Image 1: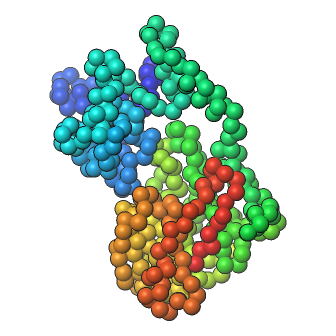
Image 2: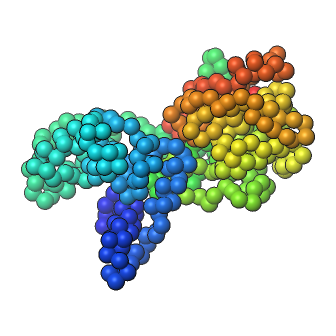
Length: 392
């Protein structure tokens, strides 16, 4: 039986691989049933491609850490992922205590409580701290006064949560009055191993219709009535021979591998498949790809949005860089400007919106000036009200 320990599905395979490297073939351990061999290299590849270590992965950082992934986390006056083990691994990979004064002090402060011994978590969210506290009390260990924690949890329990319901129900409101116009209901995306789901993407098309994407499914809506107009499953279109990659339950946050971008032709959108160079144009009404309209950008591009003229595309790439590409009628595309940045800490393109004004459609300097715009986008997994930017 596997232990009921946080991130055991990551830590145990790493321990088995480390032991086998030290002992050699004569004393080789077998991987316990139900655990995935080779997960460490898989995580290293995912983290390096994303350009960031997800918060929930930081707790088990020691299970997959190497020098490249360690560079993605800066020094700070706190533990890595609330984990002393993860912090110790990070300090070692970054050159030792002298190079990492902030996290070294945080780790030393935790160790002082028990004369060198450290807990596996310190601290985490209130509910997990309650779990740790209950375990210590059951074992007869002396603990401090938990009254503050008790009050904190009581306050949390008194707050209504819309995390689950808002993933499905969305309210369309008129601006600037915020008057409710209609409601739409979306299917929930697939959950990762921690129960988190991908945030639905929401766009207004040029026809004033609403477009939503959950996993690989795109739905077109009449925002005034909430009536569903059409549905397209991007997997059925077979846009790429190589992607997107199969759903990964270890990915945080989970993604579908498809990104939607604006296109100047009515009822058409750009679709970028993760880690693939081609950019596809999809006809939403006819539910098919317009193969003659596509073009190629760099394979590490995340999101692509085309301006009103159809001559330029704003591109957000891995590493939070932005570029401007010139696109010819025959589909030839080349980088005209950039890369510029990094412009945000979100390496996956969240919070990035590209736009241009119609009068600047034929003028490269003005398109460049207006194409790279960051706006606050309300996450619909947390709230039922969202202001949806109109793609250009």
